[in-house]
Length: 277
Ligand code: DGL
Image (cartoon, rainbow, N blue to C red; front, side):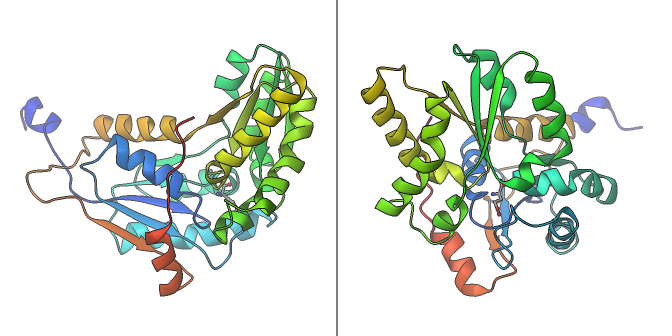
């Protein structure tokens, strides 16, 4: 029998797989790279079928299953992070029952927002598919007994990010249309329930500041799940003895997609300077 210490000291240099419908999961990837700089990361951004938000559950499950299958079989990943609320909502149970690696999913961060709101009103911005997720529905139903939860689909948000149009007047207008009514209804927490949305955090903050200047209301806070997901990834690496050994080889970074080389190039170059919230 192996001595206990040998078991606890096992290290594993296989990469972590990170999946999203497109570029949104890069915001989660950035948080994971910051928290776990020794880990190799393989990022899979579908790109050919984005946006997932309006699609039916079965279709989303088919896409994510194929991508995760590739990550597990061809890239030999030791863990998968589904950095997509829509894909988590549709497929997390299926993926966990099919693949023999730890799988982490995203879920809009209603709990931290509900625990800290002063106005007892929380706004959640997400896609239609994320709002239909079983876990999200169960969590929000619980919190709705204590606070008001205003659910709004970020119409056009994903398209802005996929087309690198975050810093345009059109982006500010699109964000204002979604966010202003939530603020006007009294929300002081805005939960980002889609991993594409942190790319628009600058515009969301602009709308919040405009609204506060106009009404004198305290500025609402933006809540993103990416740092919590990165922490969870670290905990699972520890629990399963999966941390990488930095002395063996430096971390490798790979980008994959269903959408071909030009899209992979765009994933690699996308500027992910998501403001710290
Ligand atoms: N980034 C994804 C999410 O977190 C999905 C966006 C989409 O493809 O509609 O839900």
